[in-house]
Amino acid sequence: MYFLGTFDYAMDERGRVPLPLPYRDAFRGGVVLSQGSPDPCLRIYTQEAFDRQAAQTLAQPSLTRSGRDLRKSFFSRSIHAELDKQNRILIPAAMREFASLSGKVLVIGAGEWMEIWSPDAYAAEMARVDASLEATLESVRTWEP
Image 1 (tube, rainbow, N blue to C red):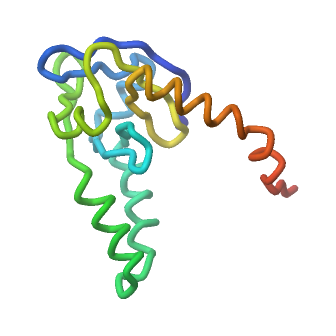
Image 2: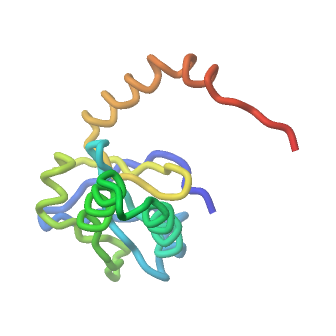
């Protein structure tokens, strides 16, 4: 399953954010919340998607500084979360602060995971993405089966 679209939500005073209706069932088997470093957002993984990302992280040699740094950055900034009865996840204060989340938030599909952004940070990010999109597309190497 790929997560698609952009959804506007209001985060409540306790830091709870609903998950988009079309994708709630995908998270019944587990939710992992992670900082989107270096992007100023949070990532929401299904347990299976997190396991795939973890495997890529662990594939980097732990004997190298970059391998150890990657592990620390990824695993120490990730937590298990749960959906409550209203299909919301509770975002810890430190993660809300990291992503500058308060009030209105955007939950976006990003393929294998979803992301939570403040609207201002997302607008700035998409302006950056759009400004370099043509060059990015030109650099993508295509292949034919």
